[in-house]
Length: 370
Ligand SMILES: NC(=O)c1ccc[n+]([C@@H]2O[C@H](COP(=O)([O-])OP(=O)(O)OC[C@H]3O[C@@H](n4cnc5c(N)ncnc54)[C@H](O)[C@@H]3O)[C@@H](O)[C@H]2O)c1
Image 1 (spheres, rainbow, N blue to C red):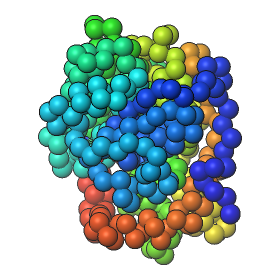
Image 2: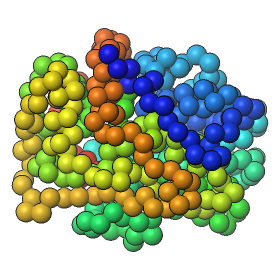
Image 3: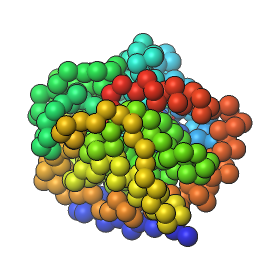
């Protein structure tokens, strides 16, 4: 069976081939889905890695990917007074990859204050600490296509697109932090770049309210292939494999001399309908193509949100390398191989029950694009 993590031999153009040996990297939110994959890439390239996360490593994405040993792990909230100062100074950090955030739209609607605390205030705390303590440190910030708001734009969205109305606190919190990072680069000379993504998928994501892990969970648990009323199935979005995302972070980090102060989009280059994605997941699971049930109000013109990736190509030589069929097949294979561990942890931690998840899905007012 395919192993979802190891099957891809990614090519790193130009400077990204440089070893990370001798560099000390802090990954905030390193126990999470994106953070864990980034930690893997950094460790494999010889970097020393420090993770700060408020979640314990046990059962986290980091743990599920077999990485909880071999990195320095510090449990704490980024807003904790003195924590960042201590870590940046103590470990003599060269690069910060700032991924820690509350990344779920429905939860942000229920908990706007907590979402702003994690996504905006913690970013401000980090920027101020960098300015005071290690202004020469490189910073790569995980931003989001949510920054463009509830757009009706059908063309791929370029970075200088004027944001449209926001429909949830998650989007507002990400744009605020995104703007702040760029401001600190321009105003205080911090070496910082903003990377904007949407709908990343791959092995180890434990956020089951997201489309791909949610589809796999339905299949694995034999539940109806019913995706509720949050979409009509025709919405087209960029789906990017997590390995393409981590490659983007590394390239951006190594190119700070030219890209500091910039925001850069990273997307698939060709949007896919959520109906197509769920059918593909179903085929990868057991060869059968189930018809997914999307009960959202049918749109006259299908919604679409995708990112213009011309800047990433031009400045970093980045382009997505993992075809969706391959990426989704590898992801499904990983969950099938690791389902017992994924499930054991969910039970042990009394994680989001199916009931809670349905409630979250129901309150998901803003489609699936992030
Ligand atoms: N996954 C996607 O599709 C996607 C798309 C666009 C942008 N992003 C961005 O990428 C980043 C990572 O997302 P993810 O999918 O890995 O989410 P995740 O929920 O899997 O991981 C986030 C991690 O951050 C930690 N965290 C949150 N707030 C913290 C705080 N104040 N202090 C310390 N730790 C904290 C959490 O415990 C968690 O382990 C986020 O910034 C998100 O906005 C993700």
